Every structure is written in structure tokens, then in C-alpha cells.
Image 1 (cartoon, rainbow, N blue to C red):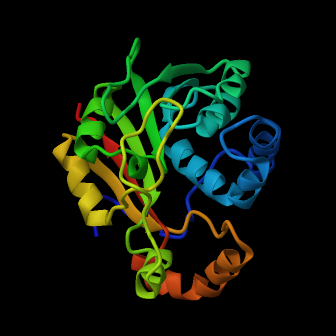
Image 2: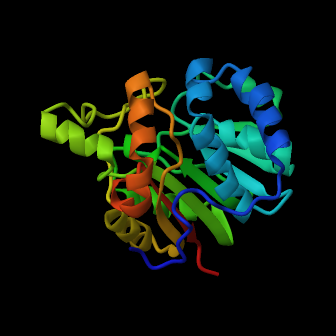
Amino acid sequence: MGDGKCSPGMTGVMTSIDVHSLNSAYDQFILASDFFERSDYYRQFRDRYVNTFRWIERHLPRGGALLDIGSGQFAVLCRKLLDARCDVADIDTRYTDALRKNGIGFKAVDLSRETVPVDQPYDMAVMAEVIEHIPTPPHIVFANLKKALRPGGQLLVTTPNLYRFRNLTRMVTGRRIFDRFVLPAQDRPIGHFLEYAQEHLEWQVREAGLEIAESSLEQLSWGGSSFSARVARKLLAPLLKVHPLWRDNIVIVARRPS
């Protein structure tokens, strides 16, 4: 599925930052910092952050300019490991001390209604597990972010896959899948009010005037918020290798046309 070049699907990507350096930076600057979630959350989902960083690393030039939409963990890692100029844009302003300590700029923005103010264009914008929280058609959000990119700059989007196995089991058993559909407010972000299928998100990217470079279904993490969820993911691993539609994540790399 998708126009672009697809990755191997289980996060088997080429890297240049060695594993020890990446894990050390994660321990020092993510686990030990005051971010939105508790430190045990970042321990449980370390692999998702590491695997997403590997995607960024493939496309962001060393010393480049990054706009991180969200809490800023990727901005911190790119600042420390890729010497990138980094800014963070988010609706939540309560957790910015860790960013300022690491020389990262912050812009308070409600992406459902506002555009990101830009002084200099960015080489890459990252929306990692964010678009599912924004109650606005994604193509409008992506089009606004396109304005923040230099010509040829790239947008990396990761988001939960609508057809992931977790959603299928919840639908069959009658359990709630999505959060309440309300408008966000400053310092009151909302949960997952909607999730997307790969083809749907690709359409949104193209509608924004971006070119799809890569699109794939990935398993970015084997972690989970509960012990049973972690065990279930491990048991599902062989099935997810042959049935990618049930993997947890969509990953799209899109380019602003030159």
C-alpha cells in the first residue's frame, strides 16, 4: 500500500549513531528529565522512541533544523546526537524546562486552529503520535506544516494504525476504542479521538500538496501499558510479520516539492 518506497516493516533501518550512544542519551536526557509522562512510561516504550529516532536520523542532515511537534523528546535526542537546531511546538506549556535546559526553543501552538510561527524554515518536521490528537482534517494541519519546511524539506508522521490488533479486539469485545471528541485547550490536550488507515492518511498527505517518499506499516514498539499487553504483542510477533495490516503504527515520510 502507498506510493512511496516502503521500509522492511519491522523497523529494520540503516543507522549511523551507535546503539550505546543512543541509549546513553535516552537514559540521560529522556528518562532523567521532566517530560509529560512518568519515567516508567519512557522505559516501557523506549523501543518506540529509539525506532522513531532511527527514521529521523535517516532523513535529517547532521546539523540540520528540526521542528518537533509534541513534547520534544525527539528534539532533545536530535540536539544531542545530530547537533541539530531544534524547536518544539505544542499546545501543552507545562513541561518546557527540560527543553530550555538543552537549548531548544518552544512555540505554544494549537495546531487545530493555528499555524506554527517560523523565523527560518526547517529541514524536517516530526509529528510522532500526534495527528490522532488533533480534531482538524489532517490535510489542513499538514499544509500548514509544509509552510514551515524549506523546499525539499520533509515531514515525518507516525500514528497508530486504525486496523491494529488492539483496536480489532476492542471492537469485537465492545470496549471503547477512542477518546471523547472535544476541542483541545492550552494545557488540556485530548486523547485519541480518531485513528487513521494508511490509505486515508496518504490521501491527506497528498491533499496537503506533499509528495510521499516512504509509507509503511510498522511495529515501532513491543511495549505496552500493562503486562498482558506486552505479552500479547510478543505472542503476536510472528503473525505481524506476515500480516502487516495488524501492526501498530503507520509511518509516512513526505517531502515539500522543490
